Every structure is written in C-alpha cells, then in structure tokens.
Length: 220
Image 1 (cartoon, rainbow, N blue to C red):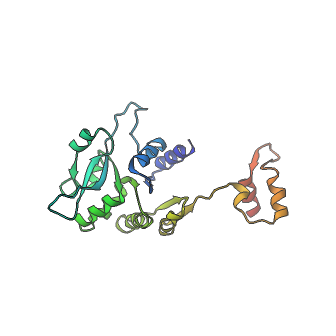
Image 2 (cartoon, rainbow, N blue to C red):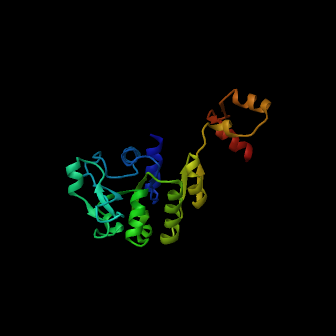
Image 3 (spheres, rainbow, N blue to C red):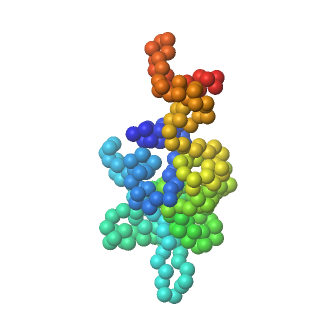
C-alpha cells in the first residue's frame, strides 16, 4: 500500500517511475501493476487496459547463429501473444510505441536490440516502464543511457548488493536497509539500550515521535 501511494505521488508531481529488477518478466509486471508503475493497466476508473509489450530476443533460426529482437505481448495465451509479434527493426520506434503501449524489456532483449540497432535502442530506454531479468551491469547501463541520451536526473532505490552499481551511477542513489529507526545507527550499547526501550515518545503537544524522528531531532 505504501509503495503504490509513493509511486502515485511521484507521478502526480511530474516524475516518471520505472522498475528495474532481476526478477522474471511476469513477476515484475505483476508488481508494477500492483504499485501503479504501469498505469492504465486496471479498470478502476473504467478506462481500457493498455497493451503491455515485452522486448525479448527473437528465436534463432537454422540459417543464423544470431537472433534479433522482437516485441511480443507480455500476457495472454500463446496464440494471442504470437499473433502480435513485431520485429524490432521494422516496428515503430520505442517512443512511438510507448504512446499506445506500456513497454517492458529484458536484459537479453536489450542486448539483441543493441546489436540490431547499432546501439540506438539505448537512446529511448526512458520509454520502458519495466526492466526484467537485468544484470547488475545492465541496471547501471540503463541509468547511464537515460543520463547521457535524454539528459535525465535519475534517482535509484535499491535494496540488494546487485543494485550497488546502479545506485552509484544514479544522480541520487537511495539504499534501502533492513531494520528501522535506531536499528541502523551506530550508538554505544548503553545508549542503544536506553533509546530502544521506548520505540516512540510523545511530545508536548501530544504527537507521537518515532525513532526516526528522534534521530532527525538529535541531528538538528
């Protein structure tokens, strides 16, 4: 619930929000829908669902050792998905596609499109809402491309060791640590014992002050 609220606040304030993860594409799509990263993908307001297209490598045929990339519907039956296949080279560019579709991409799809387009695919990665099956290096490359080709300022949130490169590449890198309040501070044992014995205190006006608030007040 908190994630959806934060994503909505960012979107309403003019920020574009995308997900970049090592998870499988369908897992990432589910989370993106739950959090509102992919908008207009539900019918709460009575709006029609926008198609979701996934960039993936094309199957390798017997005549070639290399595959290109293709756009395919991210969900639906196998028949429905394969009826809508678009070859990356002949499809409209990503910026045009994003006007009527929500775009997803895998690392393998981006690499195949990179070869097929002589690197042009990286110029429009800001149009992609969900990046799945991404390597640590791929995450950093996506952010670097947004900065280099679109001049964007990028804020990255990450909670794993495989996010370190992307966090460092971003203009603002926000590492999400486990624990809360005093759990991630360096205090001596006596002070820690005293401070954590009451996780919240009440101020003179009756408002609750959390452990995080106390840390901020101490810093001030």
